[in-house]
Each structure stands twice: as structure tokens, then as C-alpha cells.
Image (cartoon, rainbow, N blue to C red; front, side, top):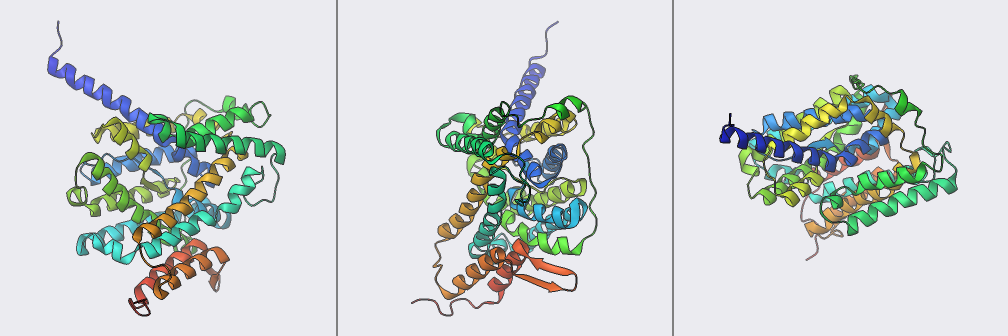
Length: 418
């Protein structure tokens, strides 16, 4: 009995989409799990919330945009500080609130148009905030590359061995990003971690016992947030940077597919989807979500524009979240391997912020711009803090708030060069 040719064709398309979806998750995997590994969150939870967040995004955007959402690098510094200061539940409260800021921005875009976001958060604010995010983490990267804990207080690996592993990891990541072709060029972090892990095994840095002890099937270690006002005020301003990046990512995928997603489904819908996906992740113990440019690059390379592919990628992420041995393997990655990746990553974040200022083409020495940029950088990097009782506002959160307020209150054009 022969199969209906239409049924056979539909089956073939579903099989193709599912395989491409698995490939898209592979592209995102290295960056996806890097954030929880660096911040102390559970990588299996991050897999689950990336999949769940992507599905939520798709439902809010009418399944029109081929985008995958996963862990945001912009929140690494505040999560590290928050976990150390308030614990994971308190930090998650701040992360959930950051997602709600996206929602408020999406409402503003709906009411006042897409230009509202660019007027509220111009490059002169967003650029230096992104730079602070990268620079404030530089000591953490160096300490870990040297085999120490992130604060440099404890030596975990002898420095000589740590430097060999971290430098091999760093060099591999750079060479792959420069010389690799095709899909391999999209996964330099994953390849760098793999090579660094392989080098560290004969040096006695990897303990395989947790892998053998871990169950194949395990429910991810979900964590609920706890109310913490300090965490909210500290972390919410960090959402300024990824909000603007979201705008750029939607433009980028629109150029790839030849569609104007700013109009349909609308940037307000995509921003809303990103924000609610971030809040969903935070309510389960995962890192905030953001649209992944790596996956956009993979879409460009494969020319597979069907949003259903991202549905498959999301479903695969959710399935992998319940495989306990995956989390156990990730937890055995030595500190110097992560340090090697971070040396490049945090520097790259700083360059992204600098590039946004350069591309804007504004005169950075004009008094208004100079004041905003200077105070964001110095307040963020110099340890400036405002304390009221037990409440303290400092770091990236303070830098973001200072930038937004100065941009709103300082008059434009006064003191500008003729």
C-alpha cells in the first residue's frame, strides 16, 4: 500500500525542520550554558527556560520570526554580584523585574512608535553601559584564567597549569572565530571549551565521579524568586543594553529573511515576548533570555527561514534539560577553561559598547555627551554608591540609572561646537 505523496512530503519537511532545529540548538549551546556556569545557576534549568522562553516568544509574535532566545551575557556581572550578596532567590527577583522593564518598553513603543526606544536610550547611554558590563568583569576573568575563584581569594589550580589550559582555550576560540568556515565559525565558544576540556583531562583537572553518579533522567533544579527591592533596583537598569540589542537583532533577522518584523508582528510584540521570556526564566531559576545573533548567523548560512525550526530547537532544549548527565558534565569543566573564554568574552562586550558609540557618529567630546559617558563609566567602574539605610545602589545599576536620567535632564545643543 503506497503512502499519500502529500503526507510523505509533509513528513519529509518535518524531519528536515527537526534536524535543522537540532543544529540551531547546537549553535546556541555553548553560549547558552556558559552564563549559568559562570554565575552559579543550573545549566539544565537554563536549557529548559531557553526552550520555554522561545516557545512563549513564538506564541506572542504569531510564530513569524525565526529567532531563538537563550541566556543573556549582559546580566552576567549583576548575577554574580547578586548571588554573592542576596543569594539566588533574591537575585532572581531582580531578573524577573528586568523582564518587566522590557514589557513597559514594549507598551511605550506601541503608544509612541519605535523611535521612543531610541530617544529614551540613545547610543550615548547604551554604549558606555555595555562597556561597564564588560570592564567590571575583567578581574573575574583574569582570576579564573589564573586558576583562582572569581574573587581571587582561593587558588583552585596551580597557576602554571591554569595558564596553559586558559591560554589554549583562548587561542582556540580566537582561531576558530577567525579561520573556521561554515557552521564551525558560529560555535567558537563551544569548540574552545571542548579543546580546553580535553587539554585539562591529562593534567588531572577533571573529576569524572559526578558524571558517573548523576542520573540519566533528572528534573532540573528549579528555584523560585524571593522579593528583594535592592536586587530589583540594582539589576533592572542592566536591561537597558539588551533592550537596544533586541531592536538590532530584530532588524538583522529581518534583513536576512527579507521581511519587516518591525511592522509585522511589530517590535512591540517581539520586545514583549523577550521580556516575558526573561521573567519566565527568572521565575524558574534560569538566566534572562535574549535573542541570539549566533542563531541568526546560522539562519543566514542555511537559508532556512521557517520559524518552525526554532520550535524544534526549543523542544530539543527542553528535552535535554531533563538529562541529568548533561548538567553533570558541564559542572566538571575546570575553572581555567571558563577563564580563558571569559578573557575574550568580557573584552568583546566592552568592544560592542564602544562600537555602538562609534557607529552613532556623535562628537563624544561635546559637553553633553562627554558628561553622560564620563559619569556612566566612572560611577560604574569606580565603585560609586548611594546608600540609604540598608539600601545601596551601585555598579552597573547605578551607571544605567545615571545615564538615563542625565540623558533626560541635560539640555541638548548647549555648549556644542559650532
